[in-house]
Image (cartoon, rainbow, N blue to C red; front, side, top):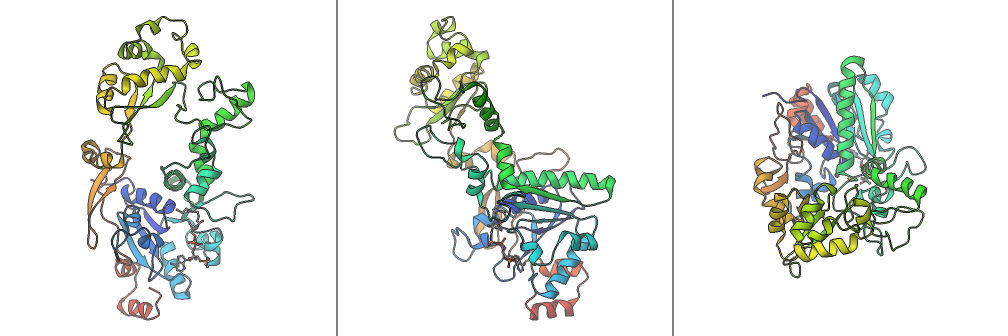
Length: 415
Ligand code: COA
């Protein structure tokens, strides 16, 4: 079966997480992704957070599946020539170097345009144009600058970053969408273009509802679904909302049986308006169905704390899976708090290919997260990440380099 991006060749000049997560997705959609790495060391993540000495880390292997790796010193003139040849034969160049690094290598937009006017040049940077444009950025900086940290955490605590890598992997996703849109536009314009996904902007896009709340707060002075309502005070900026729901249906994380010893014995419970009578029946508070203080969503907003405290008395009598089963019988939206251990063992996620076991020549078998996007005509087969420079010779021969050229480039430490 063919793949969605078959025939598309990507010059993958990315490192760490944000860029690699983008090009990995493109590889899963069928693109030929050639990762260009510095000779000797390669992508810094190969050696970061290692669990087996001398073996490519899980950090690297889980972000670079289905790619080919070549080593190339792009700062040497002959290395630059190889890079130019790659630019001529690829459709997309993806990079996430610090601001200015590409220009310092001499790989400017006009240089690329001269070589290949059809090339799409896609970049992740920490910030877009503006006062921080020259700053280096990692995940948590983006979470802080994009509005996630100031709105995450409990009302009486400091800002908190989330475990979801919304700055890195989130931006990689945004960039991938920009690239496929640019590839589509090229089918009728015939031209390449630049695609930029700044990490601050990508995080802000994912924090859209908090910008919504900022404006609601300025207009009305309050946010009814936040834990600060009705007793607490609001300042002039969106506060941290604890585990309150970000939408129009109030929700909370509640303890389940075993919470005293199991840090994940919790369930997320949503008191969706449509199933309020069912919620009352399940917890044994049928009187609340018609009680004026509880009967309407607006009335309930004044009593969310006691309502969730009463529901929690019920959830604490069940383990999270039992509670889930009972609540689902009544169509009450809820979800167990799953640990990474539980997720890794999840049969459905394995069957759907979202959790995959991959074999690697030096590390052996390891678990990875496969393609979360499922396409009926473009199935994903996850293959292992490449060793450093594993495909240097194969790729250079495809570009027309012969045995003598390869020997010379090796001697001069260009590859
Ligand atoms: N051959 C020769 N030189 C190479 C090379 C190669 N194959 N590949 C990279 N380099 C050089 C670059 O030219 C650059 O050199 P210069 O600083 O002399 O211009 C250097 O390696 C490293 O680039 P840089 O991006 O500055 O790496 P860093 O480790 O100092 O910074 C980041 C890392 C992530 C902070 C930075 O790249 C960044 O801010 N990127 C944009 C935002 C981003 O993606 N952040 C998320 C990362 S998950």
